[in-house]
Length: 315
Image 1: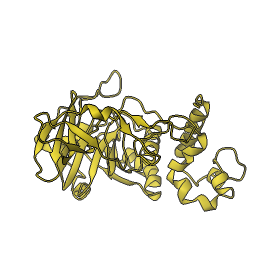
Image 2 (image 1 turned 45 degrees about the horizontal axis):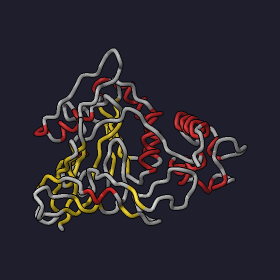
Image 3 (image 1 turned 90 degrees about the vertical axis):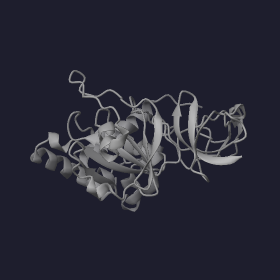
């Protein structure tokens, strides 16, 4: 058996890059993958109800782009024999073992959405991946509009998030991205129509990825990427993936949400109720003090909390 990493998934076939030879081969999943044994600490075991005990002993695991696998080099179909434990994984985009997610958001066309940004950040924090915000289309806004956006985003800088502002068509702002990809697996995700393919084209012009104009009627773009694939770039690997059509937060207890708003962790000791506080109804909660959090971010936290609260509990 040889070890490899999946770099492309399309039509039930997988392209692998051999970890020793760097050869790229086409492989199929082996039938034995249908029944993978699970242990209590398996990365494949996911919570599906409020119960915490191991509810399954085996399950079917589908290979993902980014997976480390073993394959049979003696078979012409190079069947994948085993998928190794994942350090993390994303769903739509369907990628595993990611180091950072580049969140592509437009300054304009479509309108910048702080709710969508906070939803993405929760999902990425939940997956234990580092997010990097890339604001595109800065050429479409006035200096005053850009300054106002930067002023609000300063809060995200303050709590630890990295933000870059770029014009993909003229490659403005790309010089500071040179070291961003070294030794990392990076995934592009974010706001529909924000120009993910245009951004990737600017990074790697030889890919010649198709781009589409924003639909004026809908105020958003259509996905141009039809499969997930990793490309060698900047000393690392970059994934272009199908975009998101809907974000779904999976929580089984509303109190868990606060763990993924990083300022709650960073400043937990400043709240008089500490870990017992959900930062919603408690009188005297530090985070309810005006000016402590960005207004829109605290409002988004409240909305997401209520959304989770309204979900029907699964047992």
